[in-house]
Image (cartoon, rainbow over the protein chains, first blue to last red):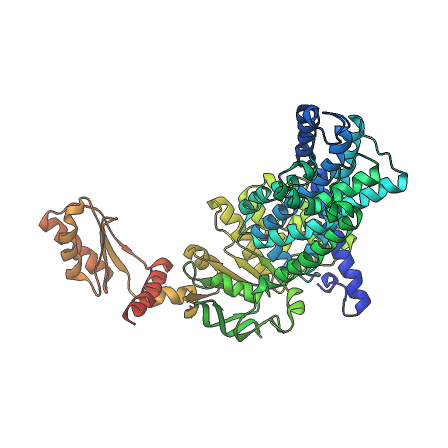
Length: 278
Length: 319
């Protein structure tokens, strides 16, 4: 049975090679899921699409975000918000998936295997980040179809994309940590109740300026607002930014916020994973 | 020559105020099936999680396949397979995709992972279902796939935590056959169960655990022998007759008479089974008591088990 012995990973180079191999296997598994469950993919996008229709066509006619009259430029204002919101909500999918892996014993199984223990956490993030990019691309095409346009240069537009993915990347660490913390899949499902105000109390659909001042302050400092405002600037869409610091320095805030989130939740997630053995 | 493949000495594990394991010892000879038997919360799963490197422990030491579980976790992981309480397979993948994925995660290269998946599909009777999503599998098929996934590296030791819980009789038989087959091929198996017929059928030795401590370590036959004599049992036709039946049985009994109102039945160990049966039957006739059934029973593992567990509960109550 020696033919079954795994290749040696005693050297540093060997370890790196096998660790990457493990990541690839986990990412590959996630892609098979996508392929197998196109319906899930459609559901994940269903929510932002419904929100687009609701806000752009139902409430949008009454929205005056630029001070130029109700409904003026609302699609141009709301679509970047929608992109940011989709990035913000998606981490609950990560939490759910991680909670399910834990509940079904999948995580125990891989922990009893001679693979890199970081593969579950890191592989998950890579897969979900790629997933988010696909989500974003589809949403982008829908936005183009209903008349939204990026007025920015190609580089500005790509930069806006990078900033959106950057936000999701950071929030996926939150999702992984939460998925490992919750008791089970059911609790993970409830996380959406937390994600909803996080996504909505922001500049996604309405400028914080128009909210009561205390709520407006929360919305202005919300990382989702920073990303939404930053990409509006990059896309050349109406910004309607207020006077608060993060609104004035949206691009910087949109880069720093995810960095802070990652710096907190990446170590928390890794520590939680290691402590599963306690 | 036999060698000890799994050995744990004085394992202790505390969760806050409760001791999950309190000086537990365990040993399994290579190529044998060891059953860990005990009620819920006795420490069975904790033991398996420690031996499979999933859980750190506070005291004692444990070695699996010649490597220390705490110090050489990586070496241990290459030599064990684990099938936990839940079927840890990916429902969305096909049987083949699952085995190839786990093959890769066991660090086989792509072509070797594919080859191995093919072998295991054949070995566990899943070749026909290979390209179907595991989602649609029966409980028994899922379990077999789960077992196949833990056999990828042909491990020296296979740990099974309640492998047949929740399966229908056909599913249980499928899993039993698979486990017997593996043991016959020389895999050392450590399994937890609270089904005594399962332990009786599969295990070479049974370690009974309760409150994190060893109660008994014996063969299934030895455990039954501890129960001693055959039992005479009379099932009452009318529950009102139970006291009268108790008197009839007590007249021939060689130990405590047990009346079970749920039966409703009365039973007791007897020394000379045939004489006791005859005497009891005659007594029933003389006293005109109607009985639904009367007979002799060999002790089952269930009884051995209940007596052992009951014994510790009484001791605890006295303390």
